[in-house]
Length: 130
Image (cartoon, rainbow, N blue to C red; front, top):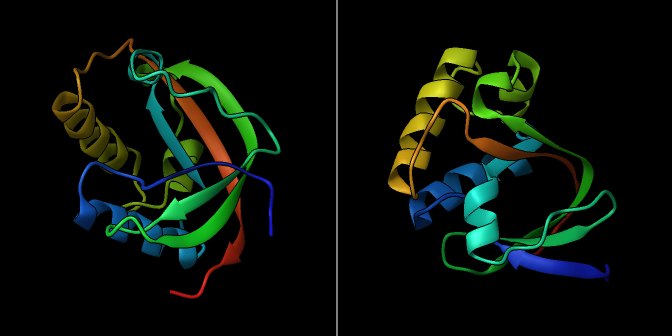
């Protein structure tokens, strides 16, 4: 087995966790981001290149192992189209990414155009039997 740093489910609901997990398993989602401020508030360690995580489904069951391959911190309004597309969501457009993440961050502590995001690229290492 891998040296796992931590485990988590993506998103803020079981339904969203399953939807995002499906995109990871299909190879469509190879990036994710989170609010730096919320990560600091919740004492979530900064991901590092080479870190491996157990990705959970919406029922909090282990589903996959992913490995961080790149981490950058940038403002929401500095995220580019390539990163938005790598998140693999919706129609893959920059506009879809902006709207969906604006709604997500508004639900989860607040949104601003200049908020700092931890932008992470990852690779799928293993799909686990569920």
